Image (cartoon, rainbow, N blue to C red):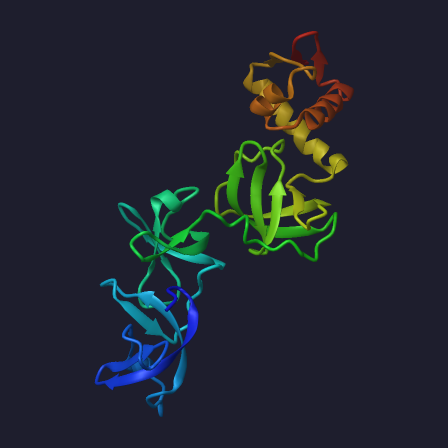
Length: 277
């Protein structure tokens, strides 16, 4: 019998509180389908399609109810409550699904929605994990360069950027050079497709096209200059790392914004600084 999966089992015995099922009539390993789940007219020897999980007392039990998540799948589940060792998620069955802290990529709160997978822990219990989503997402999206898509943030990487599940099912990424400091795991975002890779994965940007974004970037740079009392202690020749840390912009975007401000005669550029006029 396979925990966390749908399977077809044989009715081997009827009792007052339900029926017992097994893979074969002679098997000693049996699982209970509670009476409220038993379809009318079922007889010994009949086959039933059921899902197996463990109840609140860790007993193997069958259900004909449809869970929101099975082994080998991923789904968006609502966080019902958070306890001392993890959170509990609604997955459509009588027993809530446990999400341990060690399986979170970011802490969650009651009411949040989390993109999770299902796994069997060392104790033989079904649990949720926010890890491993990347390998399960599909790569055959219908989107093309320039399309605006909706997606859910599910993981961050300093080297690769922000990972997004477009439509909660397609693999996508916002490159690391874009500022993602304001994003959180579980955020729903709108983004523009900038590239469709050979394997079908999408590259995204939260930024508008360069000529539309420049005004916003210029406002951001001016705000940073003002935060430094009107004198920015570096100019557009600074390293990309310094520019990204202080402004949240890529070096190219920073240079475009500085160029806009310079043409508008709002700043002056020295060998080592940028000054507000």
